Image (cartoon, rainbow, N blue to C red; front, side, top):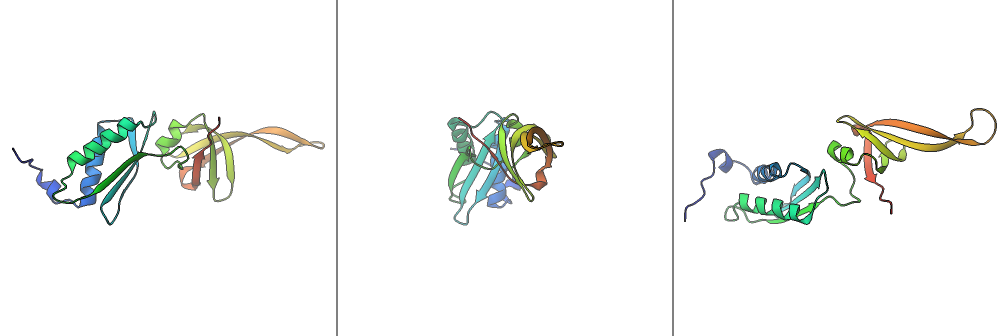
Length: 166
């Protein structure tokens, strides 16, 4: 049986660099998937959290897990692994996640306010939220419903969670 020959740059990498490289390679095979988080514990447990433009199915996690397993050498470093999708109640972290949720209702927390609104647009710098609010009338007594709109920069978002409605 022929032994696999690794490129010389690969043998000089740290374990985390190797894992990161293998994960990126695996995700290159599935362009609709993207990495949310990669953690390697002191006990060499690899925890990969994925999301996808069209969601993540079990087979996606299996495929990425197998690609990682095949790209690392247990003789060199023993490890355990967990590959999972970002849960439905997990906070959104990346612009790509916000973009895939356009049209859904979010609960967004900033340093100064909490907003429950529909995300109507997202780019690489900010999101656009729109909602209705009851405010005192400009003239006379009582309240009226007004349409609100806000552009919120990603760096101002402390937490954003999709509100799931049934």
